[in-house]
Image (cartoon, rainbow, N blue to C red; front, side):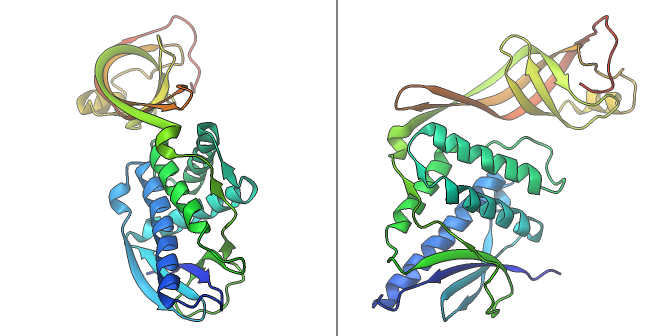
Length: 290
């Protein structure tokens, strides 16, 4: 079993006289890392796996070694956190919800790249939660002395070499108030509509990407109509082509975020196809893929 752990390292100043401050700051960096882990796993409906154990504390520099209890997510979380840190190196200020949305997109791309075929749904980042975590990270940076730094890395407790550790940008600032930046409203819907279905022909994955005919909203949804799906997967129902329309009952949460200028940002999450009513076939030639 792989015993690789994640190190959160705080290189503190010799001028910091209160040892309690060192432990408090280290624990806040650990909390920041855990929060990023929670956000990335929550984005793919795996938040119950965001559990971490303290493996070891190491002196010299203050280093906390932690590990996700579900080992398959350990590298996934670290890689997402590292790519976020790389992005914040060159984007060291967040002032608008557009800035925050750009960070969210980086995390989403990282999730897809690092998931290693573990997920079938499109990531949906909780923007408000991400904003709160980055705001807390900004506040934490203000506590550091000029000769202090923090970094993250992978290895085994007791290792001294930290050449491959990623130094976190202590100059990052969150230049807004999360509450003022936006207010989120969640609405739950269960309704009938018509959709184009983005799915390879003859492939019956339970998670499909839909495009609603009327609204043109695009989102992923899990097909929970198991009897119909069994028929489709076994070939008793002809493959859905790129111009076919699926009439179905869907259920989903619509998350609307509003920034201080009242601009709306809409995301759809927890979508399910409850019932397939009819496949309206087009008359044109169907391609192999949508």
